[in-house]
Length: 324
Image (cartoon, rainbow, N blue to C red):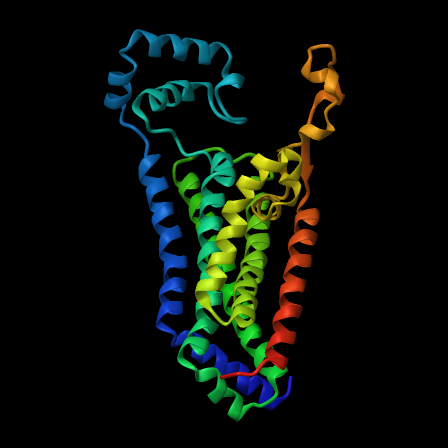
């Protein structure tokens, strides 16, 4: 990287840092997952013996405890002590379930990842939207007339900040959950710790790509509002398309492919792949199972192709169109 390029990159990082709206979005990407973690810790706090005894005084609760002790594998996670039946059943009746690291991998970490992704894509579109709204883009091109370099350095600064921030926040969130489980002597199934950090890395990379997508769309449309409208349509209108076209089109909806990348695979139901006799009761067997799975690689290829198209259109537009 040449000195001029690195200097321009530092300028763009500084500009990104001093955008108040962007700064608020980045702060929210830190604060909201922290609040989510705090809520999880509070909502799963252990109950006192007096609270457990009061809840289990109900005869139906006592029956559930007895059933759990007879068949703990149907009630408890792998590695849990049979004596945990009282706490689990009391949690059902008291609305306070013990912390489950496996469950948080599928729910809590996914919720935190969703928040971070949404805020990063908004940061991407807000960052450059300010330049177009204020007309400062033309002033910037006076200092650096090579439009391709301007586009690239802005994108590089955004991808760098978004990728690092998203990965750091989610790594801290997952580490906090693991530390909380360790402080309460809760069992952690084999492989869950690794799965969680792998999900953090995939989501961090996806966060950088999401910020880049928001940036590229805004450079193309030259409007933050237009970009938000397009992203809203992609996220929400896909549900309406499913209702009209059928569940087989779920494979090509952006939200499902995002989920596949984040969680290393996502399932959907493809009715078109099921033989007609399965719906009449005359068929059965594996061929009647319409469940299909999108792998993380397939989801990444789908999203990456879409991102590549948007980036190419954005670069061509920025290089050729007049800048007011």
